[in-house]
Amino acid sequence: MFRFFLCSLLLVVTLTASAQKDTIQIYVSTHLADSNTFEITMDWPLNPAAVQDIKLPVWTPGYYQLMPYSKGIQRLSITDKSGRPLQWQVTGDHSWRIATKREKQIRIRYQYKTERSFVATSYIDDKRAFIRPTSLFFYGDNYLDLPVKIKLELRPGWNRVATGLDSIAPETYVASSMDQVYDSPLLMGKLTELPSFSLEGKQHRFIGYEMGSFDGALLMKQLEKIILATGRLMGEYPYKHYTFIGIGPGNGGIEQLNSTAISFTGDEFNKGGKRTLSFLAHEYFHHYNVKRIRPIELGPFDYSKANRTNSLWVSEGLTVYYESILLYRAGLLNRQDVIRQWQQMIERYENNPGRFNQSLAASSRDTWEDGPFGKRGETISFYEKGPIIGLLLDLEIRSSTQNKKSLDDLMRHLYYTYYKAEGRGFTEAELKAACEKIAGKNLDELFSLIYTTKPIDYGTYFSKAGLIFQLIPNQAKPENRVQFTENPNASAAEKQILTVFFQ
Ligand SMILES: [Zn+2]
Image 1 (tube, rainbow, N blue to C red):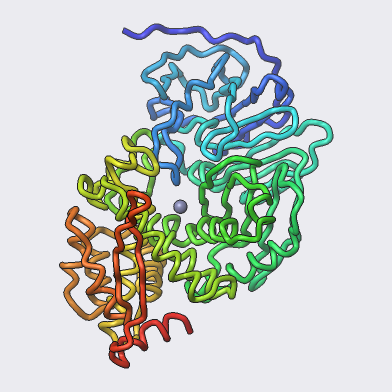
Image 2 (tube, helix red, strand yellow):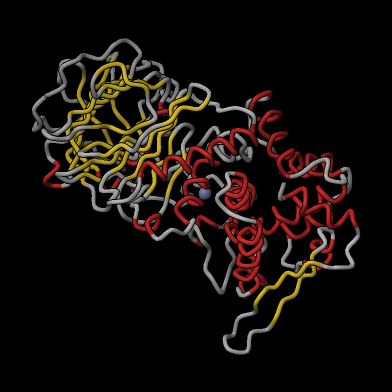
């Protein structure tokens, strides 16, 4: 049995613009920032024929974990256009049903209490607010395609908003659908912007909160080289503009179609290593690989449940694999750096007993239970085995085509065939067929490494690239070490693989 609640009218109506026909209007107030609380109004046009269920997503695309987003909802009130309360009932952890008659529009008002600054959650305090739209805004199955207008009310002294959405007026943004809203986080507050740059007329911006003190101009110069190398690989920049959104100190990043929200400070960049650039390259490359090139299960999204796929090793693993390649092509890593990264990624995998328990496909499918990086020791991570399979596949394609093709051709094939021409994701069978077509050979053996836990015969794959692979037991620590040496007896064709790779 469901209990019906009468909503209250405790909140003062602050929305000035009335809802336009068939547009969802969202108004976000930050005046309760001191209590870490957003105040939100959604004006929603109704289709009288539909069941009026409203829902909050249970996950965020890019972060494959169930999230208790609805816990933040407080003081929910639903009225008709004139302010008359409507009855509603809770129908699940993330869903509500509204009893309507012939209303053409409803107003949903609520507060949302936030607790934690993280890329997959919304957060507000008196210095900044980050909106992860999946956590904060309701949707309806019949209303995902409606255009949306978002109006933000900023606190005094807050100077900027960072988002991938287009602005039509100060602090006012539009989206063609709720899917686009869910793909477009917004950061506002006292923010800093690094020097932007344009490539092929597309502006690339980097805006962040509390980024610290570092050489922002140098970072952007190096980032431009990475984005140039990525554009050369894929052939085009498929957006009008792109924004890096730095939400402050912490860990993690989530990719969107024309933005990425990242935990970021310049501290790591100041140390002179390349981890920051690898991280940025990773998040940036995702706008091709996973946002556009995607397993068929990942879109259109079902926001009401876990969206399982066997293929996160492609979306995440190959993205990790391309980090060092893109930095190398941008002139930011040398050949030894790249080979060292190969060694390290194999060591991480080979020193994890979880490799005997879980296949790569299963690590993708089970990530909703195992966590984003697996349970080290018990299971594996597609972030670790995925790039290894990417490397083996790349070497296999290069070797079997006498360097005429590479993994680059696979990425372009998936992008131009399934995303651009067919507007959909790829199936596992289509992926294997594409790999085999490009390599010109059967790849059952290599693909068995994705679906089973059998040991990887590294020696055979690396010998095709003129390398001797050794797994050396380490006496000092209970961890094995990987070593590559160039094989002086390799054939000219074998030696040519790495020569072309590092051209
Ligand atoms: Zn990623």
